Length: 179
Image (cartoon, rainbow, N blue to C red):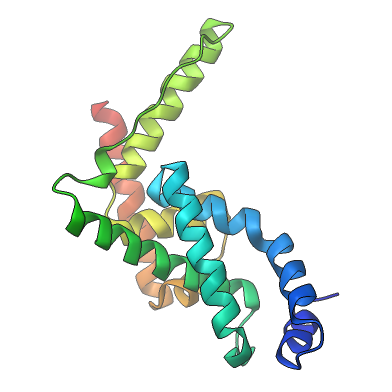
């Protein structure tokens, strides 16, 4: 069953829970991993993902299907993540982006250790990016979304999405060269 059919089923009141459960199962992982890439802490990503799905439940009756469900869903996740980050910054004196706490679990070889070190450097560089650039970078680099979809999710123009990605890549290059 397509997302559209599930949304119609939900909006018509025909087994709302069943339709919503199918949408949740289908989109839970991509939404969670996108959130996790922005906040990095698993517990925070869980909290945000839960808020996203509650908001989707509450707003799905009004979804007009003018865009793809996944685009709308990522937009909700993006906004909830930005709201969470802003709230956390207000509540905490320190910056959430600098809270990368990775533990190395005795890798079995030097290659595994090197790969882990590279991954940590990459995650730290990504965390240094401004929120919007970080999100655009994640959508383009990890999800391989086109600029039109990224613009729709982030509420910018295609040119704005391209500019954010370009600036993110430039900053990432500089940060990784310093590391």
